Image (cartoon, rainbow, N blue to C red; front, top):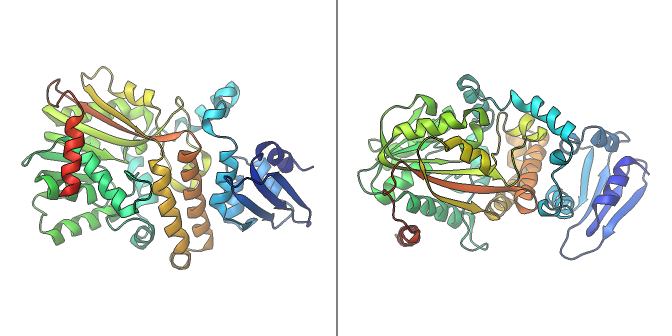
Amino acid sequence: MALIDRFLARRVKRGQLTVTHADGKTLRFGTPDPAFPDVAIRFTDRGAASFIVRHPALGAAEAFMDGRLVVERGDIRDLVNLLTANDPWEAGADALAANPLRRSVAAVTHRLNRINMARRSKRNVAHHYDLSDRLYDLFLDADRQYSCAYFTDPANTLEQAQDDKKAHIAAKLALRPGMRVLDVGCGWGGMALYLHAKTGAEVLGVTLSEEQLKVARARAEAAGVADKVRFELIDYRHVTGRFDRIVSVGMFEHVGPAHYKAFFRQCRDLLTDDGVMLMHTIGRMNGPGITDDFTTKYIFPGGYNPALSEIVRGYEGLRMFPTDIEVLRLHYAWTIDHWYDRTTAARADIVALYDERFFRMWQFYLAGAGAAFRHGGLCNYQVQLSRSRTALPVTRDYMIAGEAALRQA
C-alpha cells in the first residue's frame, strides 16, 4: 500500500473518500456518513501521490493547482472538510507542539518572514491586495469587506453579515459626532465611510496598498465626504497626530510578532487621554505557532495569525486598559463559505483574468481557510483597549444598545 493510502486509511474514518491512482487502481476509505462529505479524487500521473507525501506542507495544494490531483466527486472544499472534520483541533495535540525538533526547525525557518520591517510590509501587502479590482468584485460583498463578517443568524446574506460587522465594531467604539478616528489598514474604505455616515466622526484611513487607496479615495469623493473621510498611503508607524478612536480590522495579521509591542505603543501614543481602540484580527487558539507554507508562498507573505497570549504580551506594560475581548468562532467559516461559492461561480471570469492555475490556487486558499475556522484552531479576536479607566461604561450594555440603533438606522 502506498504511503498516501496508509495516511488516508488512518485519517478518514467518517465519510467516504474514493481514490483512483494513475494506474487505475481504486481504493475507498472511511464509512458513509450523511454528516460528512462523500468525495472521489484521481491522481493524473504516477508521481502525484508521492509528490504530496514528499512535500506535505505544499504538496496537496500544488498538485491540485497543477491538475495532478483532480476532484471527481464533490470539490476541493469537500475534500478539505472531509480530512479536517476527521481530525478536529479539539481532538488532538498540535503536530508542532508534539514534536519539539520540528517546532524548533520551523521557528527558525519562519523567523525572518515574521519580521515585517516597513520596507517589506508594502511589498507583502501589494502581493495580495494589489491584485485586480475585478477579482475582489467577483467574490466579496458590494462594500468590499475583506474580513470576517458577523452573523447574527447563519442564514443571513453576506451583505447583511458584513453590515452587521460594521455596526458591531462601531458600537464598541462608542463614537460621538466630531470625534477623530484612525482606521489602520483601511482596505477599500468601507469601514471608514460607514463610521462617518453613521456617527458623524471624521476618519483618516491608512493603507499600504496603492490599489486600495485609489478606490477608497474615489468612494469618498463620490459620496461627497472627502473632507471628512481622508485616505493616505502611509505605514502606521509614521502616522502623527491624536485620535479619539482607533480601529483596525484585518491588519494586525500583517504586523509580525516582533513588532507587536511597537504597534500597541504607537496606537497608545496616537490616542487621546480618554481614547479607545478596537482591533479585529484572525487568531490562533493554540499558543504561538507558524504560518503554513502554502499561505506564506502564495497568499500572504509575511502574514501571521497571533495567539491571544502574543496579543496580550504586545500591550502589557503600556498602561492600556483591556476593556473587552470577544472571540468569534464560526463566523469566519460562514463568511468564507460565501466567498468560496462566489469564487466558484465566477470561474470563467477569474480564469480570463489570470489562468486556471490561479483559479485553483484561490479555491484551495478559501477551502483551507474555511476549514481552519470550522474544524481547525483559528478564530477571530476583537480586542478593545482604552487609555482611560473611565472612558467607557463598565458594562457591555452600551454595545448592545448601540449596535441595535445602528442596525435600525
